[in-house]
Image 1 (cartoon, rainbow, N blue to C red):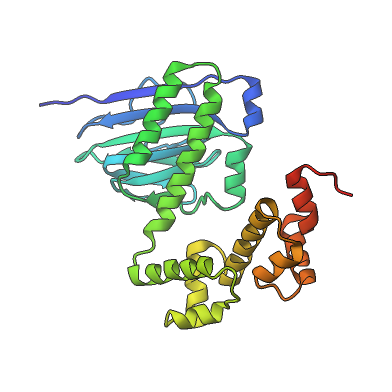
Image 2 (cartoon, helix red, strand yellow):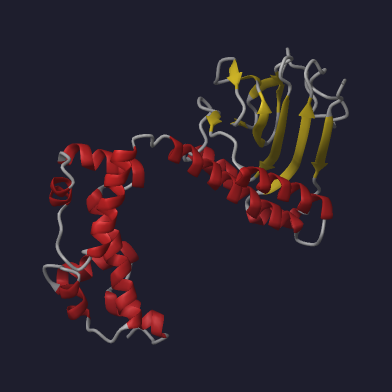
Length: 300
């Protein structure tokens, strides 16, 4: 039986005040392209339609998710290649690109187009990379549900819907990044040891424990342990321990009557001065100032 392409596409209005949210959504859509169908489909407004051979340049970011089938993709920084089912690819503003589904498989795709200083910051901070625009994360029902929610909200056009859309896009981006990082951890034994190390750190937060001792207890060399721990958590073991101690210190300062000296000793700091210096370096306040602020007392 012959199937025809189907789609659900929204081009979204916005108010000048929406710019203050640092991210605004311009378009969201879904297309189902059967095998041997013409592509791109017609009916898109000027600036969005394109020809595969010539490609196009957009003035916004787009996040495109292929949930079924496969196709081709190329951009100014990425050579032509296949995008399989479960791929997400990023389109960058002012960056040439082109893509299409395979004739023999067709595809189903969701996308969202957005712009603003929040998105620009992801590019500037190397969270989005022009030379690595394709992320193979597999099929994920949570990602599909977020795209469907975008379509639902954009269709309603209720007051404040741009702000809600921007929040969903931030959630979507965060979840895609999470899936991309998490899938790279295929060594379950190493992952289990990193998880155990984090558990030990939390359980012994009041006991001096060095990263070297942690590595030894897990039968790992310190160099290997430190590298794997940093890759997984984004922090060196010593940084991770220091941050947890500061979190515990904040909890004790706000929820107990213990003195600063007692808290410093409980968390294993060498002296109250060392504790105060470390606390101020991370928070910008002394422990006493932090306690007064949380209790609503004036800083004398």
